[in-house]
Length: 393
Image (tube, rainbow, N blue to C red; front, side, top):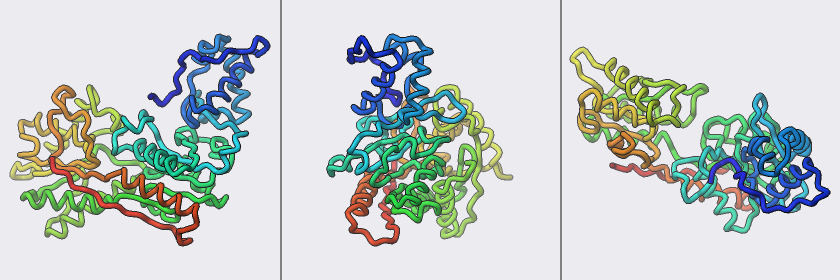
């Protein structure tokens, strides 16, 4: 199922006295109430809605503007993108737990990769639903540039946020609103700004430290953090992974190497395929070549931020006439298994990676919010840290 609601033919039979404008509003209310259009998801264009309901495009635009005034639609500032709001007369919403996430392109737990925020969030929804709690699921994209209350509508009983890990401003706004209104909030991550909330997370510093120790145990000494580009603003989890690497190097008596950037933020992590992958691989070749020492020696291991971002590094090693994971070992993170196939142009995988076990985070987050609502937790914020796993390929 895609993130945008389907514009398949509606089964609703309109009343002959129902004006085109009212037809749009009633269709929208009905779709929100039944869940056909998930709250927070991006709406089809006015033209697509007009075609679906058999009305003029200008009428659809007018109706959507009215729907925005009623809170049924939320517009993202500076764009033409519209998101589904809430049906405000639902009596169940006041007791529902709101889950805020970045769904991106994954909206089905069965197909969402386990390392994604989508999987984590959908698994939380599943666990809360199995516990008999009503849940409202929101895509944090719908909050960009807007007031969270416009999307939440009725006050939720609690909030679970998985999209705050990367400093998502929409998620941080929602958390601040909960703080002011006394709504319990549970978050995924351990950045300093999240520590006043109940939280669950994987220890990225420990994971990177164990990866580096794995490389050192195999005789690698010139281990270089090899990142695609610097984050702006910095990501706490990335800083933690660098810190874990530095700790392991110093522990072994070696000076840590400063991270090396080889790519461009314009060629984002969603583009590690096709032409973008080839461009990144070419830039990785240049960055690796610049690391040759006076004796002509290259690094003997690369520590990449995650498995996807290891793809250009693996191809660059091959393009330099070297053997990936023999001449230069490559370590990844997140245990990403997709697209590492000859058919995808990437016949190699990192030699070692980390499985964060997001299913354990989902369990911890669901357990924390239920315990907080049941009044069984101490008043101070609680933290749950779960074990990671080193995975040798």
